[in-house]
Every structure is written in C-alpha cells, then in structure tokens.
Length: 518
Ligand code: XMP
Image (cartoon, rainbow, N blue to C red; front, side, top):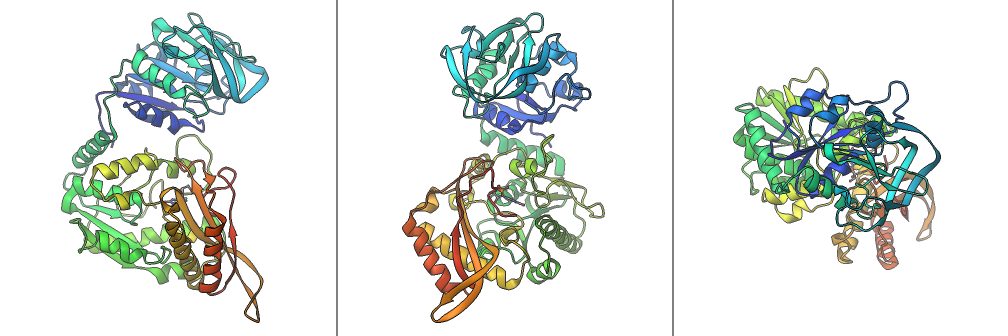
C-alpha cells in the first residue's frame, strides 16, 4: 500500500537510531520519502524510480563478517546516493576505499571544516560548522574517484564526494538538529544533486493514500479500531474517505480510558457526531479487568490488553459478517519502539503493532500512517477537515491507563488515576499550560506510604504527575510547571481522590525515562 508520487527519495535503513528522522527531514524539503530495509532487493529499489537514495547510519562495522552490505551496482545506476555515517563508510568500502577503527572515537558536537566549499552539498554554507558525530570507525582512504570535501580534528575524511557520479558520503549526521546546517545539507542533496522540485506536501500524502487504499480495498469490508485518539481518528476518517460505508469503526471501551472519554468519543464519532460512520461501541471494561487481575509485568499487561482487543474485534467482525481488512492508527514511533522499524532494538512492544494472531480472519492489516511522525499525522488530520481540537489533542496510548498504573490493575485503581488525571488536566488548562506542554497526565505508582488525614493515619497510594515538552515523542524534556500550579493540583488530588495521600512530580527527561511508565 505505497502511495505513488512523481518524485521520491528512498532511505535505505542500516539500523541507525535516526533513520526516520532522515525521511522526515527530506519530507520537510517537500519531497516524498520512504524507508526500505537494506535487505530489499535492488530491483525493488530501482523500480520505485527514486530521484535519490540515502544510506543511513547503523551499528555495524563494514569490515566485519556478516555486516549489513550493499551491492556495488547500487552506486552505478546513475541515481544519486548520499551515505550517512555507516552509509558513508559502506560506500567507501564497497567502492574500494578503506574503513578502519578510528584512533579516537568521535561522539557529540564536533567542528567540521569544509575543504571544498563549492561541492554541491556545501553550496551557500559557511566554511566551518558544528556537526553531530557518532562513530568508532573512520574512512582512512577514499575510494578511487572521490575527493575529501571536509575534515575534523580527528577525522581526516568527514565528507567525500564523487561529483561526476553524484555520490556523496558524510561521516556526521545531517538529520540531527545538533548539526547546525543539517537541513541545508540535505536540501542541497535533494535539490541540487537529485534535481527534485520540492512540490510535494503532506496534503498530497493524504490524497494519494486515499487513492491507493481505494484501489486496494475495492469493495472489501473494512473494520477500524477507533480509540478516539489522534492517530486512530485520522486513520478512521482517511479510511472513511476511501471505503465509505464499507468501513465500520469499532470503539472498544476497555475501562482504561481517561475520565469521561468513552462518552466523548461516542459524541464525536457516534450517530450524533459530524461523520457518517458505521460506529459500534463495545463496553468491555469487565472482561479486561478480569484478564488483567493480578498481572504486574508491564509487557504481559500490554500483551493481554492487545490480545483482548483482538478478541473483541473478532467477535464484532463475526457479527458484521466477513471482514477483509483491519485498520490501525499505528504511527512511526510505535513501529520503531516495537523493534519493527527495520533494524533498531526493541524497547517496548506496542499495542497491536506488527500484525495479528494467525487465527484471526482478516485478510490484511492496513496502517496508513505507519511512516509518519505525530505532527505529520496532525497535518493529515487537518487536511481531512477533522476539527482542530481533536487533531491537536495530546496522544493517548492504546493500552491506556493500563500503562499508567504501575503494578496490578483493579477497577478501584483505575478510578483513582482517572480522577487524579482529570484534576491535573483541569489545573494545567486553567494555567494555560495545556497549549504548550505536549503530553501530560497522572499515573498511579505502586508506592503506598503512611500519611495523616485529619486526625487519622493513612496508608495510601502516591500519584505521579508527568508533563513533557517534545516535538517527535522520541525524546522529551520535562515541562517546567510553576510551583503554584503543582501545589494546587497536589492539594486537590489528595483532598478529592480517595486512597491517594501523596503526589510526586516526575522531572525525568526521555531518555533515560520514557514518557509513559510501562
Ligand atoms: P514512550 O512511553 O514510549 O511514549 O516514551 C512515546 C509516545 O508513545 C505513546 N505510547 C503509546 N501509544 N500504544 C500507543 O498507542 C502504546 O503502547 C504506547 N506506549 C507509548 C506515549 O503516550 C507517547 O506519546
């Protein structure tokens, strides 16, 4: 289900941390970009007719046995290639240069001196700039036909070019914001080297997706898992434009939603709402609580919630009759953190990402937003005419409060976290912070401690408040909430929420923390 555009860049994934960032930066230049694994056959890459190819960084050493490779032909197709970090080393290795262990590892912000300012990649840029480096190996001898275009104190070949063949290699990471002119370097590659015109917009993505889904789905029946969050709402409306009344949206209230959320979702997407959707609400709270009872392991909890979701869908699907496709609002950070984004490590298994159990009777799963970051999904949503207050809502995870209650889940704990969360959100709104903080919520720790309430000793739970500022949800900084706002929230929570006697504010950034707790 790949949308077709007249101009595209293909990013070949070698397992680096920043691979989607590369794709995203190219899209910001107005050129469609998608990622393929380095294992993808060359014919498939070629048949995509890319205007350019970018090889990403990765954890391997090119000279080690079994390292991720590239066929020499990739560099001789007449298609411009830009290698980044590992991709740069690989280009040199394959084309006859030498890569070896660097005498000194380079990590972090590094001053790069440009030796060939007229190299197309550096047009219009200063003679020296700060770049982000992260490498143990280095290019000790350029491949024949390549010239060194920049160096650093420790790295004699920080970038190389064979202008005639349109091959470029850079040791640093232009996709990372710490690289001062990274965006300009990538846009020089995209415009000056690949000759792209940069007319592509996110709106085009939405329209092309609708078109390609329409062709794929035909008259098939489509079932959409609608949670009411940004991602699944955008996916549902996108699908409704492609499949019309063949789409049925199923909203499962798993009892792990924010306070009042089930009714809110129903009011927007249900029969009284603005969309002409087939909408089914399933109140399945009890069966989720029963299955989760006593379970404390975070991954098991996620798995149980995911599996139970699927069971509920199966039942609804049976009632509807035959269902051909299941739609999910999976977005890129979900994919990469499930370890399914190509070559990166598993951090947590995201809810339902990556396919369905074998016995489920759907032909295929559709994930039309799988390659996008959250802010890109929002642009698609606005283009589709979804109201701004819905599209700009903060994300809420599929497993819901299940991953905001540390330890086992009970209906009573759900109520505690719902009430505390509602108070915190109210106070953030009153302070106007809801417009600037990107995600904030209350979670329930499994810490119980002694307190005193009136004249009575208590032995109750501690709530953690969390608020983060982030662009892409892959990294995040804690929001600096004024103390008075925290104090008001604390006072209200301990007074109004039964069995809570302490409130913590979590000041951990991501990394090392994650945004959610489990
Ligand atoms: P973390 O906790 O991984 O969260 O830093 C990053 C972003 O992803 C959301 N999140 C999830 N969303 N299913 C989802 O649909 C999940 O299992 C899940 N886990 C985290 C989280 O709310 C944050 O926006």
